[in-house]
Length: 159
Image 1 (cartoon, rainbow, N blue to C red):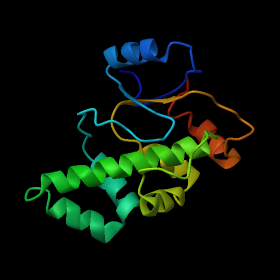
Image 2 (image 1 turned 90 degrees about the vertical axis):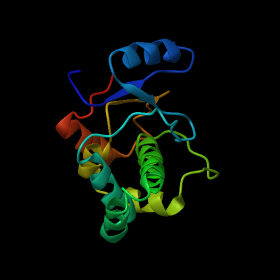
Image 3 (image 1 turned 60 degrees about the vertical axis):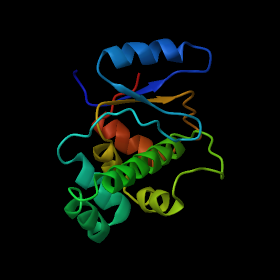
Image 4 (image 1 turned 135 degrees about the vertical axis):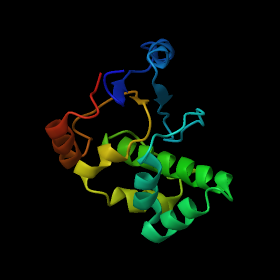
């Protein structure tokens, strides 16, 4: 796999399920729904991904507590990580100008903390080998600073 993550713009009715099968066959985990919530794909994050995202989402102290207790309570760590991934994707979703609703299962505290992450730091928080789907990309609605930071690194690439 040449890149760890992809962003795919797939307009409604354009065959997103087919694209998801193709990217899954290439080793990517498909993400992205209108609500910004993510299914549990069973994918396990790589070294460094868990602690990096937990520190950003929960703060240094809580992330340290979760990581120290991982052998005692693995389920708590996995649940916290899944919540952080869901909140992170909603932040990306919002910055990409996608429509969001106020009603969301995303923890507002996590979303608020991740919203304050600088645009240039967001790509390094994306976990795993994900293919993140959006069904439109309206450049007039997308966050300009986010797009500039994304353009500067070209990561993750957009298809």
